[in-house]
Image (spheres, helix red, strand yellow):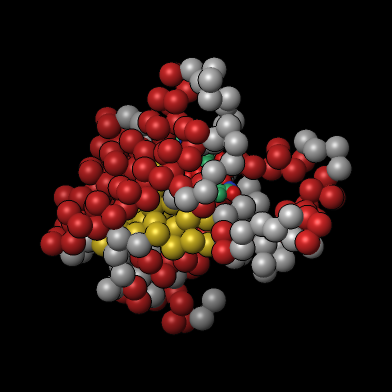
Length: 258
Ligand SMILES: NC(=O)c1ccc[n+]([C@@H]2O[C@H](COP(=O)([O-])OP(=O)(O)OC[C@H]3O[C@@H](n4cnc5c(N)ncnc54)[C@H](O)[C@@H]3O)[C@@H](O)[C@H]2O)c1
């Protein structure tokens, strides 16, 4: 890490929801590398996160929990200047038998969560101007089968991003999103690990990506750091896709060598 890198986000205090593992953890580490004071808000307490990163209990579906987490961060660190809405869940469900309860659960975590966190963080973000970064998905643009609730929630996150940029710009608060493609985390590991021919799955997944491989959590973390920093100070309301080019290449029939 260069000296320049470690001061990029100096004096910023960041909340990363769902940062105990996976993409959120990599985002937390990248923000801390860039000099921010980072608090991970998650349902479960992670082990030692290193880099001075701390944890506060948080359930993004509960306004009471969100308010308590943000109050505690401001009490401990004096401010809140960066919010990363990363916590999310995903499951598959046939549409015709989709229980209303699981639809509501997906929307509560993936969409109402970012709404609640942004809402309760806004009074603090207003103080010195801040940045909200939401984690959407390429499934907000393009859908896998049986992902009705997930796709709807992520399209909602993309819509929320633009709406918050419009409403909060006057306070010096920017709001952007990252739409990751296939990133190697627990969220989708079972799709690969449970397959009888794991190596072939890995090979075919790599082939879907013009860059020749799936993503790493740090690939998302690096984009988040840029969106949280002053280097992107004229960028707001945007959804930045980080997918190794996957959405840029519509599939051809296999016989044509796609
Ligand atoms: N992994 C991918 O390929 C991929 C692709 C596109 C988008 N995403 C999005 O990135 C984000 C992170 O995904 P990941 O792969 O790291 O997932 P993950 O399952 O590895 O981690 C999710 C984290 O969120 C936390 N969490 C879940 N519900 C919560 C709640 N109610 N309150 C607080 N924390 C909660 C979990 O405890 C966990 O630490 C999600 O929003 C996901 O939709 C992931």
